[in-house]
Length: 279
Image (cartoon, rainbow, N blue to C red):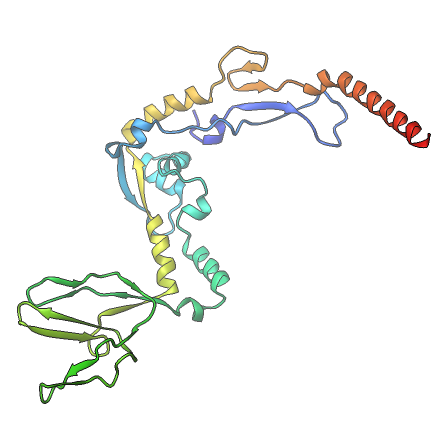
């Protein structure tokens, strides 16, 4: 049996409503997309049924399915396990597609490689205590100097700060417990900020998509059983034709007489209205 998803989806015959259809009794056969398989909640919500997987390079869902299940037609299961509905937005782009999309979005490589923001690097004191954690987002590498007075490095005396309230390179000032003294670290002399470009931002978004979950192969039987149960029509009712086919009721055949009566009634009402307005 083929494991291609859409081959498992049952068919549905509905009234052919195309304007060029000559026979009102014609039916068009389509896939019943209202039938959609899902992984049982007790499995989907239990990580013990899954393995963590990192998408490599330009791997597609069918590549991953072949690597894990030795069956590329189980690509739909790879997507289903991660609740991916739109593969174009929720699956990592290929390198070629990524480059094309980025150029379309930013217009040029110059803008793509421009600085988006800054992020702090981790700073510790002399005893290993974290003073500033890594990853704090900053819109600029400059900050207003809030210090009204500073210590003169030569005399050791406090004096007015000439840069007070002026924009200066980002800095942090703290009391170091190990050194028992105040410490000031400036980004001008020691790197404590990271430049983040728009390219970095976009690559980070893509890399997040690379971490997915894969259903362990030993549970495939459960998925096949559920797929067969969900996709098979149950016998009974006027629409049932077979396990894989239903036919919609032809409401037009039942409604033509009603439509004709309605049109006649409307026609009579219009005539009455016209006569009344003329009188």
